[in-house]
Amino acid sequence: MIETLAALGLGAAGVAAYGAYAPNSGLYGRSVSRGAPGSRRVYLTFDDGPSLSATATILETLARDAVPAAFFMVGDFVRREPALARAVAQAGHEVGNHTQNHVKLHRRGPARVRRELEEAHGVISETVGRPPRTFRAPHGYRNPFVGRTVRRLKYTLFGWTFGVWDSARPGAEEIRRRVRAHLVPGAVILLHDGDGYDFNGDRRQTAEALPGIIRDGRDAGFEFAPLKELI
Image (cartoon, rainbow, N blue to C red; front, side, top):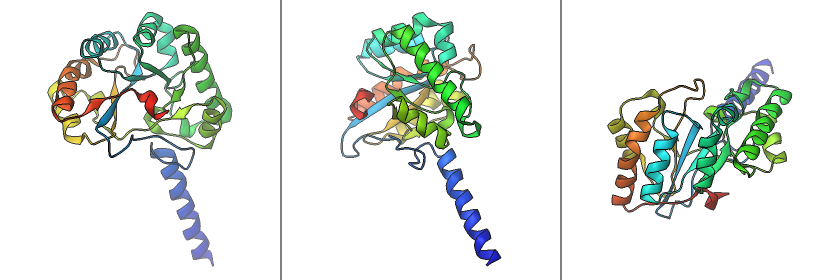
């Protein structure tokens, strides 16, 4: 009996850990991680901005190549650089909530989770002139309190199909190669235009890789589509 109870406890702990750490787990709310697998449409997303190092350059590339994207923004960074946040929205890109201070939500209680999402919601809404409709948790980490707040704010929760660790700055060509190697129909691509822990973090490599990423995707027969299709 004791061994059975221990096994059940370990199993429950494993399920809870999966729900907390797996960005595409449905345990704490349905997470959209991919579009239709039968389509040739893929979706660019950028986390942790806006930043002075990369956001403006990324916007220039997207405008030049007529590519839509989604930006999951940190509320505190929106407060520091409101003009950049407005430029993203005015260009027609999706602006999503990525918490106020980029904290790991799976370790936070209900009050802190609620504050992180609601403060960012208010800052983003006031700055760009429209409320965010989407949310992505920092690192994808969640707990049951995140799901409750996401539902109350009427967000669509997003995970991702793949990331390429561009935040580790492996070089622009390596970032480009990793994206090319992982592209699949319907992919939601995770990139970063900021550093969630450092407002002055350097994301220039991601910005430099973007023209090649777009070119490679189109050469492979993919179309870059707006994330709003999946909301």
